[in-house]
Length: 100
Image (cartoon, rainbow, N blue to C red; front, top):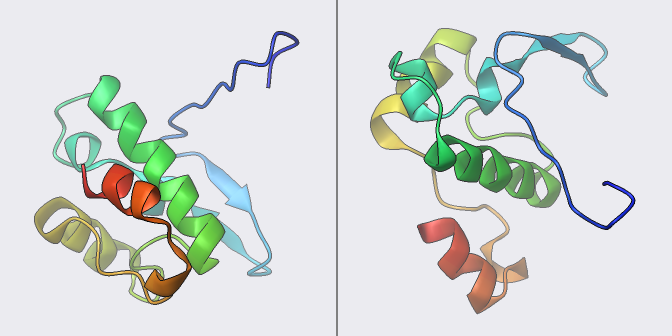
């Protein structure tokens, strides 16, 4: 968050994140379908990244984290994201945002 209140996000690509999982988690779980398919990044990819961060805040893990990395990438690029397990926690506004 900048001094003037703007929130800055970035696509972390193939970097790694040390997490509560007591291991190093490939950032590929957070990649947009466009990035996975080799189409590069744009505003749509940025919105995807924001939505996945919101997803993780609600579900405690990014989508498909229970699967091996390659299977998760396949699901993300073909199926997009699964239904929320904790859907009852979501406001109608958040559901509408995440459905885009």
